[in-house]
Length: 212
Image (tube, rainbow, N blue to C red; front, side, top):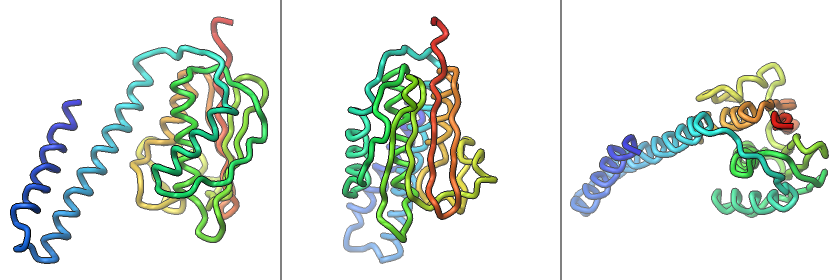
C-alpha cells in the first residue's frame, strides 16, 4: 500500500544512519534512532490493522462451516509464538462449528486470543477457555486476565480506543473494533462480559444466514 512506502523509507534511512555513524553515536543518539525505528514499526502495524478493517467493507462474507475446535489450538499456538510466550493452557468448553466466512472467523478468533495474551494478569498464569454456542453462530473466548469495569465494556470496541485500565502500551485500538466489524458484516454482534480484576469473556454472534 502507498501509505507504507514513506515508512519503509524512514526506517531504511534510520538504519543506514546507524550503520554509517557507528562508533560515533552517543548513547542519546542510539536511543533516538531506536525511537524512530520503533515509531515507524508502530505506524506500519497501524496501517496494516486499518487495511484489514476497511477490507471488511469491500466483500460480503462467504459462509462455510468452520471447525472451531480444530482452529482454536492452532490460533493459540500462533499468537503465543508471535508474542514469544509459551502457549497458555486452553480449555475448549463447547465443541462445534460456526457458519461464517472462514477467513473472517479466523481473524476474529486470532484477535480474541491476542487480546487475552495482551491483557493477562501479572498476578497469575494466563488460562484461556473457548468454545461455541452449539448453534452454529456463536463463538466465545474467556480469560482470567485483568478484566475491565463493566460500565466501560462498550468502549473497547471503539476504533482507536484504548482504556488505560485495560492494557499496556501495545496496539492502536483496532483489534476489537475489527472483531465487532466482522460480526456486523455477518449480520451479528459482538459483546463482552467482564469484571475488573476477574477476567474477560468476549462473544461473537455471526448472525443467521440471510440466504436461509
